[in-house]
Length: 137
Length: 143
Image (cartoon, rainbow over all chains, first blue to last red; front, top):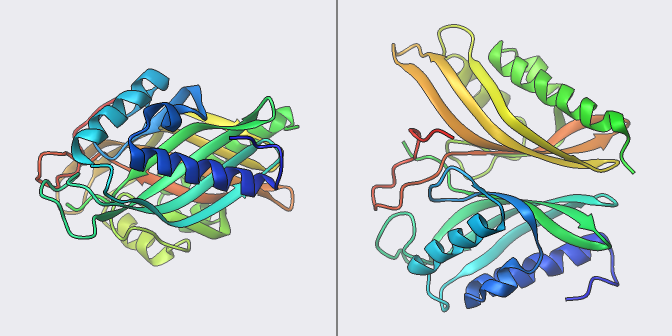
């Protein structure tokens, strides 16, 4: 994906939409395409944190056990705050999988996602992801 | 380009925020927040679109004394007017129901520089969720 044109917000929106689409297709190289090597991931399931691209990749290996390519991984809300070379995105998403509670639930479940980005050599890169659901107990 | 002092200013804002929580000082906490702050908190609901003073004060009231609220390994990535930070927080102390809390959670703080002052515009705090069908929050994990 080229990022030559458009505002920072449009470039980041396109990057995040392409990433979510790659997740839906289980296309691991495309999922990882715009991530920093030292990304820190806070995911919905354990572990507590995953540091580095190899550990980030493993979180998707786990996810693919619960999620099928036909199921939702949909952006319901997306707000981007972008500076010249640092940005963050705040999302509410919906995951249509058997994750979290075991049996598949109709319509999936909503979760929160915060993404931190930096501009490196003229390209926006994801340096941090925090996915979660509220604690129910 | 970010000034050398931006990271120091951001760390000071986050320190004031954690100190405000530790001291159960609502005004000190709120002073660090942007007016349009969006919060993804540990407990439901999914999202809160303001500072939620009432929620904060009723949570403060569940602690007997001061609250242990400390960041470990806070990472700060700052531009000239936008920043994001993440780290792990250890929450400790005695509750009014007699229980002692000692847990870790993940925290992401996103800031904007508003009229020359860094403010927290977004907060995301969570624990992982066990995938065993129990819906249990993983409050027993340690980094």
